Image (cartoon, rainbow, N blue to C red; front, top):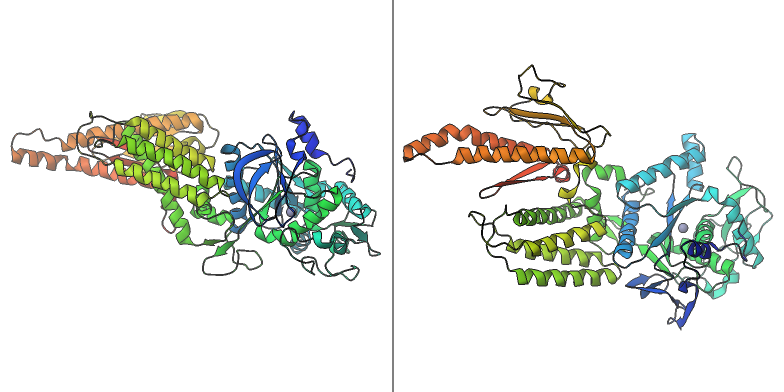
Length: 623
Ligand SMILES: [Zn+2]
């Protein structure tokens, strides 16, 4: 059980467990910030300047400890599917968390509270004729799946409200004992806002008003908010010193955060709509409970997702939402991430198909550059002399610009612009020329650029499409083995029948993104088919080799078809005419493979290929 005096020592325990002793963040620098009464913390200066809702300006982000930076995130109220508005907030903070970890050296301990008892849950459960607990469990799992699909890293720990009721009751007792809350004859407990005086409104600078909680007749003042709500008939409840009831919303987050981090909290995040009254009330509760001057050093708020052309945010109540699952049928999580990065996390985003398409194109441009640069490094893309000095200079400039942008309140649009500018400069040098390979090449500078670009995207949680391992696309746990290899029509061969045999000539069946069968068949003048089950990472390697063989084979056929060995013009024309079907078959194969996620590029004297399952998905009609 928690008590107001000594038991809330989560942060010291955490530090002790990490072998840190008392962190410098537990002391405070004496410097008092202008006007707002904000105390600049002491500890590890991340080098980032962050917009702090508590001061309404950019402050240097100084966390208690780089090894255990504390971050509390308000979690979902689990009564329905999450929509893109929620996705946007969680993805934006996930990007910030990854940047803080990977670029600025913070090991973040993130706690997320899950509201699994609430008016909306009780109402919805009643409508669906299920228990609030099973409804909450269902949508909590659904939320976690959506977050995983969006590649949002899970918090260090999820804490559910219903699993922390005794701690919440102790926390309320502490606030009453300090003279900042009162219970009523009806069994409710309210925070006494008048007792807080002008200390209320630190976050949004508002005077106490009747906002947030419904006005109850047993409140002393209309603006007082509920810490404990007496149970209504047929509602779920817990026993308490004030009778049966359940916690108010704001007290949950204060208790759960304090349970883990004590009176010290580096970062608190949530959507901008949570700033008032939710976060304002959390501050009031924690500061009176802990008797501290400042609970929560940095409050970060994300902007809303708007449906383009409308003032309103995407929300369930306005019925203007797109679920995360529906969105992910039309675009990848990487595209959504890049879409989110193209505006500051604080600003409202206008959602439109066009804006998503722009993000898709940017991602494709980055992927195409990486592919071309790799082809150049392998000697498959032959270019004229490269301006190496220019590229080294651009690379160094970009690294500085990206880091500066990220350190300036996580300016992701600035960072993306810098990366795209580097890509632009790289592309200008990659001009193919028609000549045999053998001239001077500059692989090191392109290798460095590619590695930096990949590292940037990896840092923010984006995979460039061609780097997606096939193993992750073909997951069924089976063993990697070739089960049949034959020429179509040869009935003596072994293994299950090949689906390509019933397909039109030249048609490629698979790979699809969920299946485990890959079948490649090129018929007509060339008869060749491969049929294998692939899964897991070794499957990826096998399939890679098979496509490699196929492309090499196709290249030989093409070169044969295009060869001009005959002496007379008429003989050459006749030869080309005879070999035309081979060229057509090569073209058909190339076109059909695109639809299945494999892209072959014919370069001057060679051919290269990329596995583009994601790209193929992004090009689906209507997406
Ligand atoms: Zn909260």
